[in-house]
Amino acid sequence: MLDSGHTDRAGRRVTLRPVDDANWRDVADVAPRDDQRDRVPALAARYLVLTMRSDVWTSLAVYADQSVVGHVMWGVDDDGSRWIGGMVVDAAEQDRGIGRAAVRTLAEWLGAQDGGHPVRLSYHPDNTAAARLYTSLGFTPTGAMEDDELVAELRR
Picture 1 (cartoon, rainbow, N blue to C red):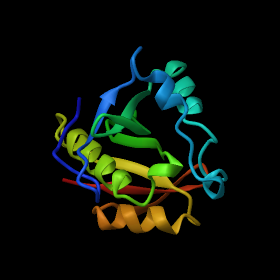
Picture 2 (picture 1 turned 60 degrees about the vertical axis):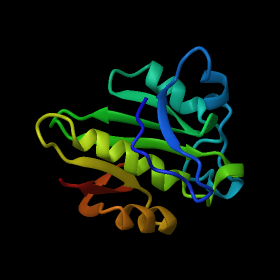
Picture 3 (picture 1 turned 90 degrees about the vertical axis):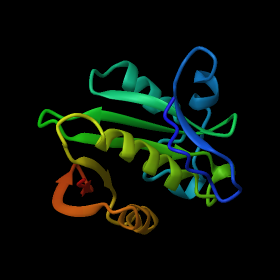
């Protein structure tokens, strides 16, 4: 479990935990708001399948106290950089600071890994909410693109 002590706006402790036999169904059912489906899958289940079929990505369940409220995944690129991807916060849990706490927790953990490699993520240029969030957490656009998304980096 990754627990940096970050909380959402309601004071619930946000932690990241492995996806396992006890929580995978709850994680798979995480769904974004309808207006976000042009940027993320309709269900986090797609990310779970991706991590099962890939040697790059690892899925984590996002918890607020003892409830599954989201999904996020991480991976290591060929250059050693650490990546945050596949974040979905359930529609009923959005706008409560859960995404912020989850990204902070994962970025801190990834940044503490050996080698001092940068932590990166990407987002669609039209996703102004994501741009605001990531910029406020210290991520800086690199000018690079990954598919149709802007790459941003956090250096320690």
